[in-house]
Image (cartoon, rainbow, N blue to C red):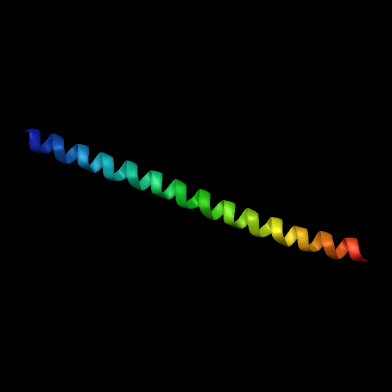
Length: 51
């Protein structure tokens, strides 16, 4: 009986870890896209500033 509980706990930990990893990865990709957009925005701003 305790083996079933241990397997259930292991499955819960794995699924929770997967959710945390996925949320961290999506947050990192969002911040990368935001930084890229910010850098491109700065370049556009400098071009507009020069003209």
